[in-house]
Length: 195
Image 1 (tube, one colour):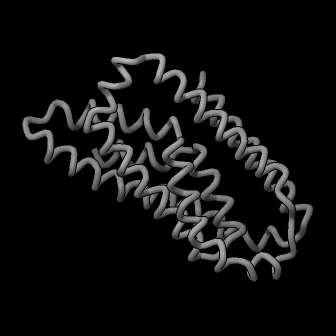
Image 2 (cartoon, rainbow, N blue to C red; image 1 turned 135 degrees about the vertical axis):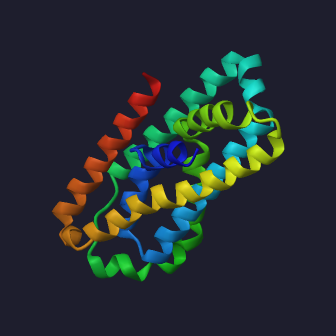
């Protein structure tokens, strides 16, 4: 169960690409809040899947397809925002950091909640580790806790990598190139989810 959740949390995807960006352009506090928001949101997604969302998606297959396309549209909009994000001097970036702390937490939660990969991994995990259990409420609680820890480690690793890259991103040209590369990675992850 732990390996499954860690692999799901650390593999490339929209949440991790944005964690890399947060790590490279935001303060450690903002990165931590983004990671916390994304991780808590994922645990909530797992909980929702275990409580009956799986039945709802099976009963209404059109809702499943519609939600996947809506989530993909949101993530593509985020990719556009990332590709067209203005570049700024390193000093200007650090001045506005405290105002964006709550925003980082909410963005982590929103992106994870709208991430089709999160819902699919949660559904698979619930099917593998919760439904076969004789004590389903305890199994769901345990799976949620392990998922939260794995997500903190997985998303946190991407944010840490971004922090390590922040020194390289001191010039506007490198920032612009980095933003566009991340936008391409985000588009690629959406395309992979829809394929």
